[in-house]
Length: 260
Image (cartoon, rainbow, N blue to C red):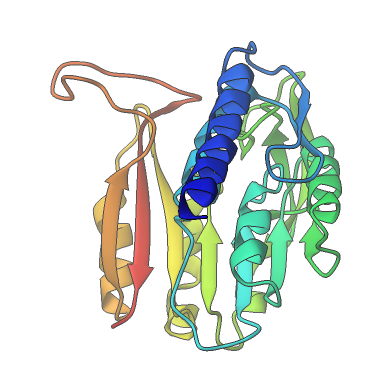
């Protein structure tokens, strides 16, 4: 019996690996559908999907300790919905409020989350910011959409949401992945961070601009967080010499903040 179970697990894992390999061979910004998650899931960019899948589904990077049956989670930067599905898989009764400003990506996220069987997620088509206004948003077409000051044929006007309005009670997990707007937002919610028990923040270093990673870490430390940092997907072999640019950023850092 044990051998049969092992064989079944091996077959399942190999099927997953084969599916991901096929997806990885598709060109960038190619739309596709897959059932690798057990339900119909729509993707828009194979490389970003693979990266998110490995982090959020395989590694379960957003897993946190809680004794609550229904933890309160705020997801700033839902993209196509993998983060929400990962969190709901781990915490089925979690109350999740998510944000995705790109209307096309948000529509796909809605479908993916519902296809996964989760109908109690509140997903808002707004960009998280320091106030409620309207701003210019660059539609990258995948996971790289961001607020910008420059207008082009790929920009639209979006409504923004003041994150402070949600930080009025204890938040079990706050995810901030908002493509370069994280420093302004984390500064703005500094006085409310004591209500947050666990936080994930993706730091984006903007090309030709001062870096503020140290200030972000100081804010977390001053609010009682221990933190763990790891490199994102910009990894030059010789960092002192080589510069890699992706979507206007020359470094990405994943920051996990927790309390002990």
